[in-house]
Image 1 (cartoon, rainbow, N blue to C red):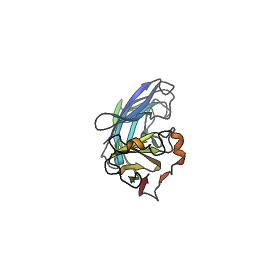
Image 2: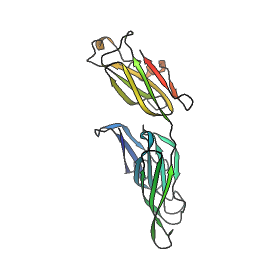
Image 3: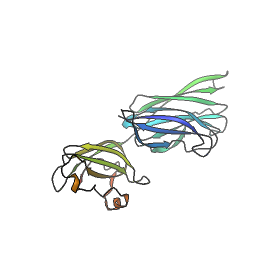
Image 4: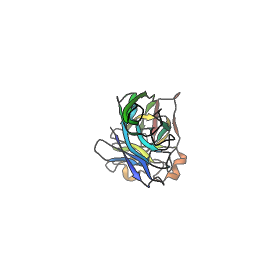
Length: 239
């Protein structure tokens, strides 16, 4: 299982403070690269908080200066399991006079999450604490398949999943298999490609190149696997 860490970074988004995140696996190793979360970059976006929801996606919230028209406001972004935004930024606070700041978020790890923040003047005297609950609908699926080498199952191989819409066709997940069967779970809707490589411990490894090679130019020869709401189940064979 993976988890996300979020932080504020000064100057990285081209202005002042911006919001960034990184997924880590259960051993604390980074999964993929760090990514920018805020789309609005003017002035300061600070003090992020994150909660994981269904299908290993996350909701991130932060305070943003003048984005709601007056002082700090509270904004959020849904991020899928691959660090990609789902939809756009959204405003959490309805009351916008003065500062709405220092947000935190928690979820039930299913479909509901709750924001809480400090609001200036809304309770009639100084700062008060307010909260808002919402739910999220996510659609995901799994992709499984078989790796074959000349119709035989390999004794040691790795399957790699690529998001075809990403720049550079970045590998976003991998599955090591010792019987030729691979699977990727909790995939958001999207377009994917799978490649396979025999591991050095497989007796045929020396005579076998990775599927479509390791050069991304050869990915143009691969068939895209499109996961849509109407087409959720797949079984793919990689030769």
